Length: 248
Length: 315
Ligand SMILES: Cc1cc2nc3c(=O)[nH]c(=O)nc-3n(C[C@H](O)[C@H](O)[C@H](O)COP(=O)(O)OP(=O)(O)OC[C@H]3O[C@@H](n4cnc5c(N)ncnc54)[C@H](O)[C@@H]3O)c2cc1C
Image (tube, rainbow over all chains, first blue to last red; front, side, top):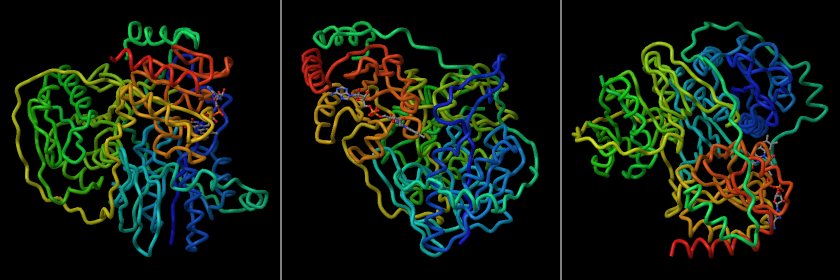
């Protein structure tokens, strides 16, 4: 079985998000890059399938050379090899198209993604890849088993869960629950050493078509100063919520 | 041409997110001078509910094959009936699974997690959530066709009654790649993403046995419950309640955080809440910096007392 895991490189979760002075772009200065946390669930799941089913795991990233340390980290976690499509992606569609182009020729049985990338919060790439490849798509997956040419996926729905059987090849977008948080793989020395020699292929982008432009960006305005209420005066809190904020 | 909107239902019953999406579509149509056509798959609810928010036409897709959800089959069904260049979806789990597939089928632009009415419609430019609530992006669609998903509780539900008409479309979309084996829905629980009030608690609650008081407070407020990430990691609460950067992002009118420190990753999922109340024993908790109202003290005393006072207010 061949698995392709889509990895996005995003600012470390504690990063302060700043924009350039003219607000036309995200300011990448001083940013630490990490594997998108939701992709880590997908990658760990793939590595588990590698152990249990002898699958091979390829990671793919659409990005410029700056993303290579993150790709090496994915290799250290256990992927067999990696592909980087040399394009600083400008929208979900251009990203999805490059992933689909690589997948088209690779004969993958399963494509695993995180359900959303925590930088631009598009949540669009996995579904687009599925449609571009004309494959079934399961989003927000919190469980996955593979049985030959069929997958059993559990997806989160509002107020519950649904278990579905899916014909492979398919695209599955995962989140926390796809594997347990405690099972996320932290690379060890051996993994880090071997990642240095694992194949990382760089391919050029097929097009530069973009469907959505980020025209400008803004920071979230700060809240007004907090009003503190004494724990002995909860009547005042109730009054403020009722009369001032008008939320109860 | 009409502005189309996907009115999501659960077991035939319209979701609040559907009304919000219709309200949103209405505001787009006001800008383009068009009408709103709502599309729904196998609804049992009355179309009157959609006319109320401004949909003057409702297309009810009847398709036995769509009894079970499949992103691809639903996208195909919407494609068959939506004949316009603007299609609005709520940003629910199902709708945000359909939207990217449909965008590719139609060759449309897709702008997700939208927060406000468009700044302009030709070309369509709109404010959206980005960087997990730590920033905003103004996105512009290229080309003519565009699909929007509206972040839940951002735009709000706005009544705008029109007289409408309903049309039934019998379809039989192929749905053979996926098959639903089982479906578990907890009944009677408020949907966290739709809730107007959310009571949330963190590791400060010490253990799952203490959640009764959180549920009692949520009960008197008609609120949904949520939790911080470590709480769901340890298994005190289900994963589905975890809010934050790696959990759900929510935007209720009132968010009450009890015994939560207010780490940046937690804030990322809740800082779009309109009013935030923080209750924490530590006066230095960073959460106070992002709160509207704060109480420093022991949650084990404050929460039961607050519950009684709200009960009294509600009479
Ligand atoms: C990649 C990554 C992603 C993450 N994603 C998320 C996410 O999505 N959501 C999330 O929540 N976290 C997330 N985190 C974790 C986050 O950094 C914090 O660790 C977490 O939010 C802390 O949860 P907490 O406030 O419940 O617990 P703690 O940090 O332990 O804080 C408990 C609080 O309770 C207070 N307290 C204790 N006793 C009482 C009492 N009797 N009465 C009142 N208050 C009391 C304490 O003063 C303290 O402020 C993420 C971390 C990483 C690295």
